[in-house]
Every structure is written in structure tokens, then in C-alpha cells.
Image (cartoon, rainbow, N blue to C red):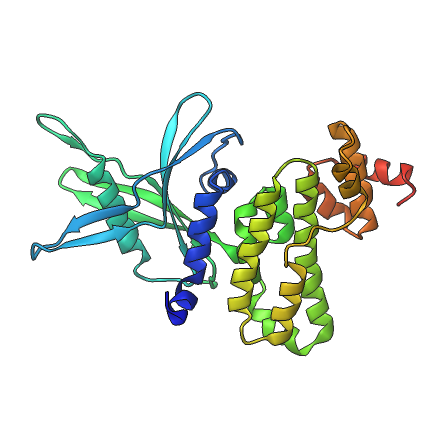
Length: 316
């Protein structure tokens, strides 16, 4: 792949790779977009993402969706989803979503003697960049001789997701794109050491939070390391004109796991229960200067329990 082509598609590449290598991360995102309540043990199955569309002149064009899959819940019910990831607002997105949806519906059509049933998937868009005019929902309306049919397409905007929200809602799939949230401040961070330190502290909190989830057993090491590697890929390109920001981000998210008490316990193979792991983890996070709010969002524990553990350990 040519260097220029790689730069142009890096965000798409990261999105496609993370969803296909870690499909379980899609579950929390689907719950967020469509107000679903899938459990973590729901099953994600990827479906055919390349579809052919016959044009009026007889030629055939291929349509490739970003992410097309079904989620099968524990009770056996299944729904199909189509997600697109866009780095910028695109006026042609709705047309493409309809084309993709129509191709999918035709591929899966159920034809009977006197009718054909076309099922469109649940569709949504993630905009890595957005502005005040970017809607929370888009819609597609089909006018037929017997009336109109319309459906909504939820819009997710990276700018709406803080680090705390991503941890609280377990939207780990979005962490590689976090720098888009603060993209407009990168020039200022490059010129102002205090602003740069603030940004790097935010990135450090992501690493600490992922380390905490790893040591609590909520994610595995491959997931943790891959999220940071994908983040590096995006950061290097997004901050390509800001040397200080790029170097600082790369140094922090370079893949090392922090050395602290909970890690030592974990590596020594001590057989401790979940509660003991939580206690060690909370003490470690307090010593590493994470705020109480951050610890609540990362661990899912109550503020009262965290404060109690901190006081018992004489950390608070």
C-alpha cells in the first residue's frame, strides 16, 4: 500500500481492524446507539460486507459496508446492524446508507409467490469529527403508492464522549479515536506546556484505566495492548503536524503496563478473590492520583465503597 493511500485510510483501517478482531467491543456500542440491553455474552457474527448493485447501464458496481453484523442474544433472538465510521461530515452519507441497506435487503430478500420481503438492517454512523449542525439522528423516508415508510439512523459524535463516559459505558471501541475529541486544541497544546501536560495526563488516565480493567479481569492483555496500539496509529497521523503532542502521546501510549501494587499481586499468582483484587486496584489507583470519579467509572463500584477502602488503607 502506498504511503499516501495509508494516510488517507488510516481511520477506516483502525475501525475495521478493531471491530473484526474484537467483535465483543461492539456490544456496548450497539447498546449505546440503539438503546439495546445486550449482555456481554451475546454473540456477534459478521455478515457479508461486499454487495453488488446493477446500474442502469447494465454495469455492476460493488458496495462495501464498513461493519455489517448480527448480534444473537442469549435467548436466541437476533438483529442485524450496519455501522459506518466517518472522519468528517459527508452530505452523501444518507444516500450511501440507503444504497448499502438496499443491497443488504436484496441479498437477504425472502421471495414468495406474490410478494418479496426486504429487511433493512439497523443502521448508524459514527462521526469522528462533527459541528453544531451535525444532527443526533438522520432519517430515510420511502414514499410508496400505499404510503410512506421512514426509519431513523442514530448518529454518534466523538466530541460527545469524554474519557469518563467511555469508561462508564464501556465504550472501549472508541478509545483509539479519543484525540479527535481534543483535536481543535492540539495547536494550543503544542505551544503551551501546561495545556500539553493536561492533554498527556488525559492520555495517561486512559492507560491507567485500561490497566485497571486488565488486572480486574474485565479485559485481556491482547485487548488492552491492541487498543493502545490502534490509538498510537491514529494519534501519530492526527498529530502529525505537532511534534510535541505526537511524541508525548506515543511515549505514554506505547504499550507498557504500569508497575504498581495490583500488578505485582497479579503477576505473583496469588489466588485472591474479586473483592481483594478490587481493594488492591482501588488503593493502586488512588496512589496513582486517579480521581474518585474516574475510579467509579472504571470499576463500576460505588463512591462510598471506594472512599471506605481508601480510608482503611490510609490513602484518603
